Length: 493
Image (cartoon, rainbow, N blue to C red):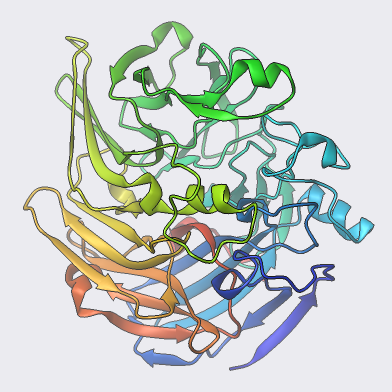
């Protein structure tokens, strides 16, 4: 395959035995363009668009103990059209990226170190984290948007070239959290941010012209760390979970999160252009939800699906991973989905009576789900969840649920092969909700390479219909997105 090395980013990273700087999490420093990729099988010609994945790809030797969520953002893109694919990857050129490249070293300590170890002020409720823009990625208004879960600036890139375009012009001073939601029906982007000062949570709407058209507070009783939101046709849904920093320790400058199992969870339902006065609160069982799947309306009810954590605060040493260096036991437990035990769950909120009810849709440990994006905010049938690998922040397969007909299908990636959140790719001219494909980057530790796999969403258990070999092994990461070619605008090259 023809591969052009566009840049090699200088790194100060030293050899080490950190579990999340090796193996499937081995950082990559080359930016490349590649065409005529080797394909095992056949790429369907009924696909047109781009698959994006954001990864945490650390460049410099960390200050103290490293947590993988702090790695520098690197986007990987596979563009598919008329049965052919091209690949490229680029670092997200954040202000922190340029600052550390200029210094030749890390400037920010992370989650596992006290604030005073950072050499510069940072973001997040702790105030000392690097805005790595390495958590999430979506496409809105013809531009790629990369975001950080601790509320950074939000960086845009060209969807054809991955050229960095700087900060999104609409982002408020308080920043933007990961998990902005793109409503394909309206062209709107819904977002939120949170922080350590009252009212602690804000919600905003950006239109298809990239104009901030709505921004309002959603007051909370104190500092929280919401990770995700949901939306239906007429409402946005937020949360107040009983897991938040200890106020007394926070006053002493220490950031220590506690799960208050004696408290109830709360959900806020607000009209999509509503204000704080319009918020309706509903109480549910105590938990924490890292990711929601979808929400929709059914008569007087708003129905929300997501992954209910059985144990949001796992004990140190509860991870199934045996490869733990001293001082990393707590981190390993908080990266092991089998320690949290998240399961597919449904909440019903009755806007007329104020009543709630909730129940599991599946008892298995699952997370990082996707759906057909055309059904976001609407009644839907199919869910595609990632199967977590015990002991690790890695995924070893996919599970498809039929929420209406019942039943499920499963596919495993194979021994030593780890995938990611797998977006749904609609087939051109598709006629049903699951008429399309699932797409995922796979890291193969046996071959020391990565590839992109495509599965027929109707027949997931049959395995991949094609494997597209990438020019290098990519570092693992978090979230991914599929954007149809028609939504991207004209190419700039």
